[in-house]
Image (tube, rainbow, N blue to C red; front, side):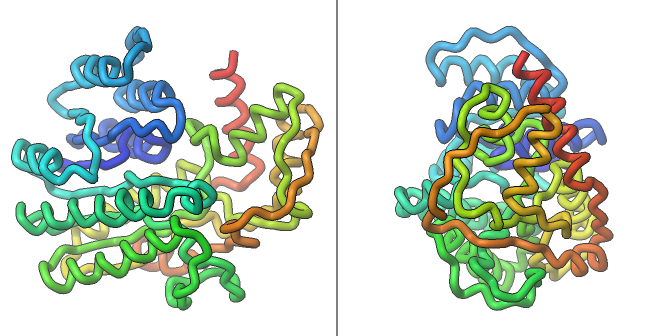
Length: 342
């Protein structure tokens, strides 16, 4: 099969590409190497995902990415330095390749930054996704998997969060864009017969995790004996989902959408194990064998109090079965972090 993966040089995308290539598939990676965080990290992700460790000197971003494209191109893998907001640029890729399935992971991420830059989040997350659907319509591509987010649930009072719950009250622009994409997806499914699965990811962590996310950030700061920003009283909680379980969920979604027609589904992918902020910090402290220095701060606008995934639909529909308990996941992450920090 030929897959196009948007955001394929990011945290989740690079793991997915690594998985698909190892299983003999062909992959087209579309990534704009956005400077939301250091683009050198995404270059390293890319090289690891294709099984190559090339020597790079980092100067101008454009030159490095062009070199990366040249070095990593092969029969089964192509990398395009492309922004999803540029429909004409995307169209050239769709013209060049036969595409069986689009797996859309690219987005402007982050709840707090979205409050500062709401219009940019709308442009990337909504317009960028619609550009892809327009091209799927034009090129008769009927299979589409989209990365949504647990943030669409907002401060849902009922737990665990079910796909059947009303989600009309997002509390950040990021969450609102993700919900808008789910709604617009149904339009393209209804009008043009595009089969779509929206996967609501619940706080994904593990090796290659973005450095701005809490587990990575806290691990780095604690290891350097620096203060961690500790928001609220420590009782906020998340359904942390290990990257290997997310990749399994995506893979099972691929199998389902390949073998079924007339598909429009929203599916939670979580661990079904809720961990408080206090518990998360303690787990990292135990693995590093260091105590955290906490800088107590008030809750931040847009942050939800708790996330908790009802994964019964994922289990029943696609056979999803997460296996990584939080303590084991943190152990694997800290081991990866220490290897890469040395």
